[in-house]
Image (cartoon, rainbow, N blue to C red; front, top):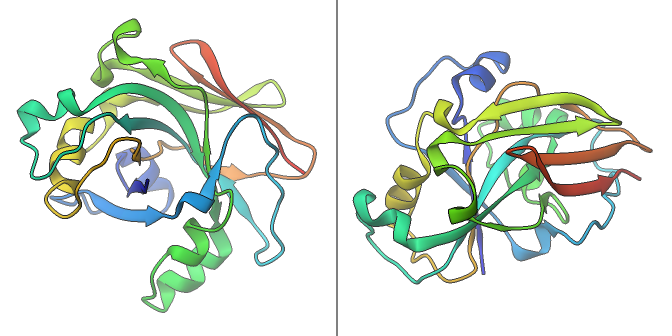
Length: 204
């Protein structure tokens, strides 16, 4: 399985990072399967950077093999969604970006793709009408609404499938809204989708 992720998919987040471009196509990057963090395992802060930020996102699990998927049929290729955290080594990202280098080191390291429990998409509102948020130590730090995505979930799937064969079990991180910030040792991170807690992580 593979993990595809989308950068700069919320205007509010782009603004807080001083990005003003609304790109015509989704910005896609990937993570290896060693990046997955699940089953309430803790996130151990690595030593190779000084700041690691939380980025709460809606995550979609692909349910059927597909290639060159039409946007109008994209909904047929996923049955489950959850929330996840794209942990980002922010100072390293700034350094790589300034040099025009790829993001893998700051985005794709071990345990950088935290995922919560998946739920059937038919048990929640439409995927373009989902509210989600991240609490840290009981206080809400990030809130998002899927209707604010620059590129919708179906648009992302259609675009990505032009370049990658999507396979059963693949995960797509769909981008983060504003409110990112650093995590620190001892914090308790809880991710919610439509008021239901699906993700629970301790930082160590």
